[in-house]
Length: 448
Image 1 (cartoon, rainbow, N blue to C red):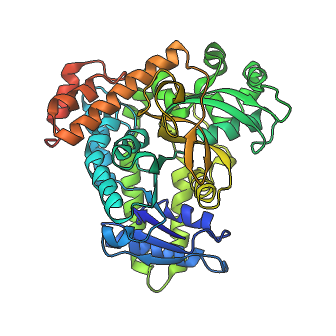
Image 2 (image 1 turned 90 degrees about the vertical axis):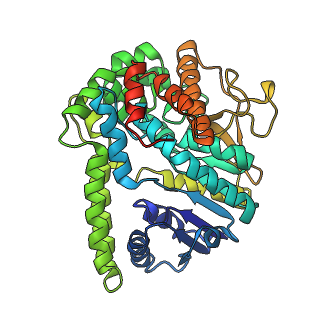
């Protein structure tokens, strides 16, 4: 089976490769990237990482997009349009207006989406033309928005993934004293905007009420420390970590503003240094490229959401969460389920009505069938079908509807070049409190 990674020079590509080493599902891995230096450095890391693994897939660097897509069974879209320098601008422009700048949330997320959506749509069109039988797994952020735009071309053959929900489920299960691999769950939302509302053990007992009542247990994992026992009990659910930007907006923005550098600036410097150093040794000393990557990855994981942790008293991440996040394992489980019909349940970003019609066939009743939602899905050779979940409460539904309106305005702006739609995407976001400020941010970006 052939897997193509678009954005093959991405820093987290070795995590995907690592997940493939002990499984023979993928026999050829094709890398495509617009930056030849980065993809050569990553290929060197993979070459060293593959040593001692006889089932490691062959690795090939593609010459162009069509070459990368042709013959692919699965396509991972993991692109970053504008690179880390683009992320720096997405974060700094809003901060200058007193607005949150973050990769997927607030004004920063909208700006990133506006820049990325046209490229993602072009990729979807080339997949449809060159590899119509391929399944596209979208890693590209903002994942929900991008997946929905691609689904307008590819339908249900594009599936978005994120490691935040599965990480939340596993952390909550460990805190509740349960085996993370043996629990079932009820989760609803959009990408980076979701809630875990039920966590059930093998005997059918809901573990969440007991966990919410246990202050010590809540303080033992990331979301418990981020949100605090008082707020979690008031909610009656466990929010995705990115909801910290909504529930503690003042504190989160102050922490970002007061930080020595934005997350984008940190990654721009860190990854720039890594790729320059790794490229210099890639050909002759791939083992050194690997060591550089692994130490850089560790630092990246340790500093993930550092500003949010600083806003809640400052604390270190748990050792369980420093191995790479888990999105690579979700991707492999998804591929295996589709390729081998190994039925499983995964939290994924899919069309609300995938595998069924509107209304009764939709997983989340408050949204239409074409809206991409993040919910548990049944996965097999048929793809991913969202499982109908309990209706979101008014608070959850309100935020989901607001963010879906933002996503769709951004998709319209990217498809038509409409500055009015782009302004709506920014100004309607719940974390943007001024149309005038939104307009100034938009005016400082390149024309759509």
